[in-house]
Amino acid sequence: MFKGVLSPVITVVDEQGKIDCSGNEILIHYLVNKGLDGLLFFGTMGEFFAFTHEEKKEFIRFAVRTVNKRTPVLIGTGGTVIEEAMELTQLAEQEGADGVVVISPYYFKLDEDSLYRYFAAIAESTSLPVMLYNFPDRTNVNLSPELVLKLAKDFSNIIGIKDTVDSISHTRRLIEVVKSECPDFSVLAGFDEYLVPNLLAGGDGVLCGLTNIVPEIFTQIMASYRSGDFERVQTEQRRIGILMNIYNVSQPFVPAIKQAVKLRGLAISPYAKKPAGMLDDSQINQIKALFRQANIE
Image (cartoon, rainbow, N blue to C red; front, top):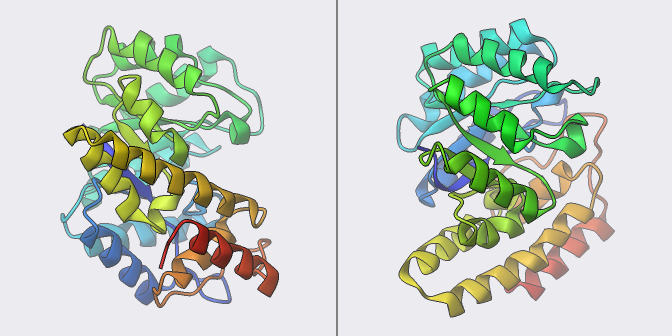
C-alpha cells in the first residue's frame, strides 16, 4: 500500500519551540510538489517525542488539511502511553489521514508478548492501515521477522513496516519471512542509503530524513531503478552517501536536517525543540561543504 519514496517531515517551530504554521505550509507544499509517495508527520524527524499531546492533536488536524489529499498522509501515533497512542490513532482516522506509523514503546525493553499486545491494541482501535516502526537504536527493542509476520497475519490493517536498522540483513530477513506469506506487506528502509539495497532485496522503498532536503535525488533513484538505468542509480546513490554525513553534524541530528532544508532556499525557521540547540557557523559550513561535494545547489 505504501511504497516508493516517503518523507518523515520535519516539524517547523519558532524560536520558542511553538509550531510555525506558515513555515510548515511552505515545507508541505514543497514536498508535495516534488512528487513524493507520501508524507509522515510526527516521525522521529518530526520530533514526535518533544510535543505535548494537545500540540499533536492540533498539528494532525493542520497537516491533513494542508496536504488536502494531494499525497498520502501518515501520522506517527506511537509512544509510551498506550491510551494516548490509541487516541491519536483514532483522531488521525477521524481527520482523514491515510494511515498511521507506530513506534514501539521505549524505556523498558519489552518482550515479544508485550509488544504484540501493544500493536494489537492500536490495530484494533482503528480501521486505518497501520505501519510498524522498528528503530531499536532508540527503543531498545528489535521487532523480529517472526513477530512482524504474526501481527501481519492476525491484523489485516497492519500492512507494513519502517525498518530503521543499520543492517540490510535484518531488512532482507523481514522481506523473506513476511512477504513469503503476506506478499503485499510493505517493507520500507528507514536509513536513507539503504533504499537501493532494500529494492534489490525485494523491498518496497524508503521512508527517510534526507527527503526533506533532496527529495529529487530519491525520486530520481526510484525512476532510474524502475527503468533499468543503473548507471544513474549509482550516481545518485553516491550523492546520498555524501549527504549521510549531515546526520553527524549535530546531536541530535534534527537541527542539522532543518538547517540543511533552510540552506536549500526554503524560508523556514531552523529551530528545533529544546534541549536541542542551534547550529554554529562551523556546523553550517560543514553542511555547505557537503552540498558542494554532492553537487547540491
